[in-house]
Image (cartoon, rainbow, N blue to C red; front, side, top):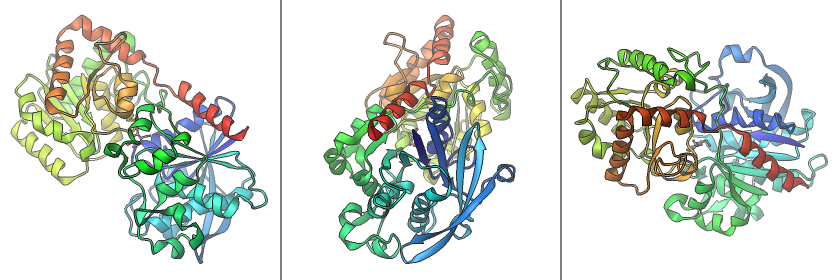
Amino acid sequence: MKVLYVASEALPFAASGGLADVAGSLPKAIRSRLVGCRVVMPLYESIPQHLRENMTFLTSLSVPVAWRRQYCGVFEAKVDGVIYYLLDNQYYFKRQGLYGHYDDAERFAFFSRAVLEMLPHIGFKPDVINANDWQSALVPLFYHIFYANREGFEGIKTVLTIHNIQYQGKYGMELMEDVLGIPPEHRQLLEYDGCVNFMKAGIECADRVTTVSPTYAQEILDPWFSWGLDPILNARKWKLQGILNGIDTDGYNPVSDPNIVHNFSVEDVEEGKAINKKALQERLCLPQRADVPLIGMVTRLTSHKGLDLVKYIMDTLLTRDVQMVVLGSGEWVYENYFREIQNTYPDKFCYCAGFVPELARKIYASVDIFLMPSKSEPCGLAQMVACRYGTLPVVRETGGLKDSIIDCGNEGGFGFTFKTYNADDMLAAIDRALGAYANKPDLKLLRERCMTQDFTWGRSANTYIRMYKELVK
Ligand code: GLC
């Protein structure tokens, strides 16, 4: 069996969020279970030179984008045994940033069309194409309309994985024919609420729709979580499945991570974390105290990450004997807010703006408590990474947070969870975590449990493979 995994970002080449982690680690896990899996993504300008040097040019094609024909170069690279195809078109991809351009609809229509056009030229005919998020959600639609009956393309199954339903690729109807080249008789596949909606088209046309945790698969059937797509998801519920993400436990490993100040394992977690914590406090200009609990957040600063809860209790929390660090950028209201808090409490709170993977890892390894109070969280990877580095997670019971973190009140529990989206409930969970921190035997046991949780891709990769096999049998 052969799978082509289509993603608009994948590590190590380009990343703006969790999709890149998944596209950089799931294919490897699938391949190690003896199922062929290759990845295709755009060749962005930001891909560093040392990675470009290991790419080989395979061929070039002419790709239809409605009435246009656009050049597409196909490059190949191998990472950890996985073949990545990188699709080149400088007009679309030689730009700053991955997304957010005025013509994103056209850029990703081109990408999705190019994925299908390249198939006869690469000597790899997939049994299943797994598209991801709105950027490649047109692959199932294009396959259905233009390729299903074409010689050499017969019998391919398509899967769409939703990593976040908030981002759907919604555009004006005028794009339908002129940019996407969809004939009027297929209009209903793409139209939703009077707009072109890429994700809706993917949900309609894919043979299976998956999302990144079982709880999120349930949640998006409800208008509170669905950003308007619940009617269509309820109608297509039979093909919806939630599969929890794993993380790359080789890449995120405190024993060997070169980004942290001192490597450690479950055997010497106490000393290991203490050394990392001291170094982080120094870097952040916080008092270098070993005994004070250090709370961390690594997050995009958008409202669904639960930042209004954090704002609500911040002053109360900072009256306790704690230190806190927040790393991330996003909406300016939150950036300004955290800057202000840092000015008010300079010896307790530090805000670092940006997306800084090296600092993120130092935070995972150094802090005692990791806070992730999301309003919604399709899967979330940071809570798993934090555990791997011996940090106690405090999370809200939603999406993948609910599916990956077991509260201490339950058997085998290792984290602190709260149910309702309420700031006082969150503070109560933080206080429970602070209580555990103050009790050294508890802390040791919990850290060990966190570090020995199975967050590998093992089980989930098997579930993906089972689903692919069911589709092609
Ligand atoms: C998106 C989701 C996040 C998930 C990630 C990988 O970024 O918001 O919850 O972990 O995709 O699937």
